[in-house]
Image (cartoon, rainbow, N blue to C red; front, side, top):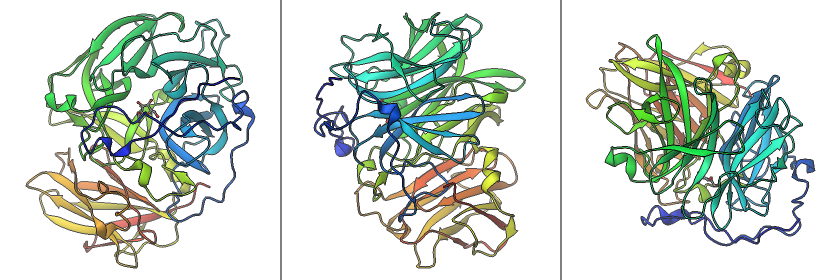
Length: 504
Ligand code: FRU
């Protein structure tokens, strides 16, 4: 197959100098030897996945670069995860959809690459649905993926799979949504809206800070319904990417939540995931008056997260890319680069009369968890750990999570600010690979009015996720200690932990 020789280079420092687009400019040619005709037949590289910093409880590919999660769907007992993938190196480029599957959201098996660049361009982010009623005419239960083809322009394309998501055929009528003038127009997220009897697609306008909604009855012809914009100036300072529009139960009714990834307008600088709460009437999303921006996670490393389609039991499960465009190209990982967050269940909770989007690690984590044990600080017996703490939100406290060689992440509970603050400085391990990696204040509001602040810390070889039990407070951050963290200090009692086994 002929493919465009597009030249692409990730200019990671752009957000630092306040440049507009684009991380998507220039060099790294697509390798001649790549088999673009048959991506679904090439076995992934195998690896022991035991290198320094290699996550043991988070998804990583054996080798090479990943960013956003893409096209996730559940079918017949299998959770499918695709992702932005460079089949030929651990820098951004040659964007393709890598693929992994799981029966429990925790253990993943890497599959052959599902889609590589075609005549329309690179395969940027997107989503997939299971077409149960054959609305598109490719057959009942065909998996239909939408992605942004990034060539001369960003345009929306359809690919369909009749073998349960292993291989995809490109639709001959592509692009299904052409684009002749918008500089940023990407990351289609599609869902079925039963009340209006149509499919809805959300599309992000990048630096133009808007989300377009499109509608279709057959997944092939689409018409524009509306554009959502925020009246919050603080929400309009980055580029908007990777939208998702979901509905969640709330106070006996339901609310719609529009999730928008924002880079570099995130809460800790660089990449962050914000959300708007409101209503969707089948055409338009209207946000409730609230004090925006609201962030799903106040850490530095949870970006581009979207939810699974067709998840069982009405579950709303999200996974994010655990990195940040500010420094992702420099994190010291080889031969892979970047991991996904742990999958998280989303709920809406009423906090002092106001809804908050909460994310807790999926219950399937129990499958790799050992016994809970009380500890005075040292954790043993795992490759990773979950630590549970119960604190008084009205009392100032500082504690550290660290290792035997004296590296640590400091965490402060600050009642006057009502915040949990993690301090990712040079005490945490390697930080000097990029000037923006040290961040002394990763601050999440408690988001609770309870008398107790119960926190879970999920500690892997190169990350710490700090989540309150209901997921209303969240700080996800990468750390690169020379040996893994396995201890907590500064707290006298009320600490328990369980070892977590490797998922590999
Ligand atoms: C978000 C993003 C998307 C784009 C993809 C390219 O991280 O910039 O908007 O589709 O990455 O890899």
